[in-house]
Amino acid sequence: MKDHHHPFFEFLLLAFPKAFRAAFGDGMRDAFVDAHTACGGSRTRLLRLWARTAVDLTWSGIKERRYSTQPSGTARESTRGWSGTGFSLLDLKLGLRMLLKHPGLTIVTMFALAIGIPVGLTPTHLANAAEAPLPVPDGNEIRLLRYWNQARGTSAATTFYDFLQWRDGLTTFESLGAVRTSAYNLDSNDGLAPPVQGAEVTGSTFDVLRVAPFLGRTLAAADDVRGAPSVAIIGYDLWQSRLAGDPKIIGRDVRIGGVPHTIVGVMPKGFLFPVRHQLWLPLRDSPTVEPREGAPLTVFGRLRGPDAEDAAQAELTTVGSRMALAFPQAQEWLQPEVVPFSYIAVGGAPKGGIKALPEFYVSQILTIFLLMVACANVGMLIFARTAARSGELAVRTALGASRSRIISQVFTESLVKLILGRGVGITLIGIVVGVAVATALARALQGLLFQVSPADPLVIRLSASLLFTTATLAAWLPARRASRVDAAISLRY
Amino acid sequence: MYGTYMYETGNLAEIDLSTATHKPHASPLSATDWHVLMALVEEDLHGYAIMKAVERDSRGAVSAEIGSLYRILSRLMTDALVDEVAPPADAPTETRGRPRRYYRVTEEGRAALRQEALRLGEALELARDRRLVPEPSK
Image (cartoon, rainbow over all chains, first blue to last red; front, side, top):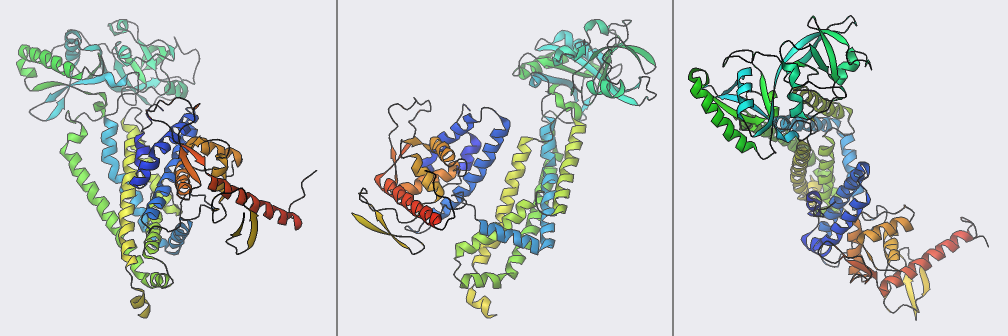
């Protein structure tokens, strides 16, 4: 690890009081760098180190804070047993006991958070997924070229004519390709011919993507010529599932849409382009096509470097103006734009992406509202539960429990309840609901976009911090209230 | 010089503190404290080296994570059992723009370790007397 000021480690250090950080922060950082280096790049060991460190720093920090606010001369707690990890086992035990004693409250809490948080984060998750680069070498250099209809505020179709003009007129792109998706009947002599999601692509497509074939070759410019032999490239999964992984597949003829095609290449496992497609045929439109005529297609290209987007947009605007002058009726309202490739899945989004859509803000507000309602409900339930226990808390106070002890107990009980609500808890329903919601979201995203991981780290971090904040607030308020119980009054009545 | 040492259990034990020059530590050491202090007996060490030494000496039975270790060091320093010292002359050159922090067990720390060792020795003797553990092979 080159940078020993790891942001997450620094964040964890905040659990300790400032004075402690000033005295020991550097030493702790050095120790973590050493421990990190000792993991030798093993993901499993790193994961274990992070998990251990996160738990240890959090609890040690809380303990240290508690100790530092006590009057001077107070003995620190023994490090026996859990040897200084600072975890309050008693509080945790009481929390778990409460969960089992009040299953109704537990289930409601878990439902509120297991559904509220994943659903609430969906718009952010989708927006981030929609802006992720293509998972190909230097995928962040690949951009979509499209028209934006300024009059209607939507995207407009591009055609083969636009592709030709842009390909010949743009120098800020290393290469340009075009793709038109469709469904094809693939007759592979297995008696089945369900449609396969595929695409017609220009030979340059594979130059833009820089992905080598698993077997055979990819398409080339010579395949784009009308009258050239009918060839096809297939995806790995299609090769395995419909063509039995035939090792002699290269050169074999299959009927696609009733026409014999020779398979000349198999792409590597996981390659799905442009979205979830795995059959590619040459795109052979007539080079003499007129503007705004012919079937729509998608144009994309590889920038000369990831920072060339502004230059590319300027050049595209110039070329677009020239085309608009030549064909004013056809091009007048159309503004050519360079946008991230992932917009292929959200064609109607403006240039700022999903996050620039008013609908996104509305959904964010609704999300926050939904979460607030969920948190308020949870808070009320815990609050009511705590109020009903004033007698028990009064007894604890009368027996000598300090105010901080009562706060600690109620706080940990509530925190345990809320954190278990994320879907990893002891109640099966909580687990089932949490997992079902998460899986449904993951599947929906995978279906939408080519290989975009549903486990977006940003969303996981957001989800964790949201959960923590919610849990802390909903646990802290009743805990403070509980600590104000007057033992004399509560016990008398 | 002889000192009287009262354990938490209320038992009294006479311990030879003739080599100690300071007041002894007032209670039995926890396993982690014992291993942290023991790690520093032979040489001054920095935090990560202490963590590794604790793990090695206890054969994995005791592990001090970063936060816990530094809380223990802080407490042991408050109790004057451990001191922070300058890095040894042969310590590797640092690239982090500052010297590493090394720790050394103080005389009080050594006295506390001696007390604890004696206490453990007596406990072992007692266990042998009651035949809970076998006599050492000669």
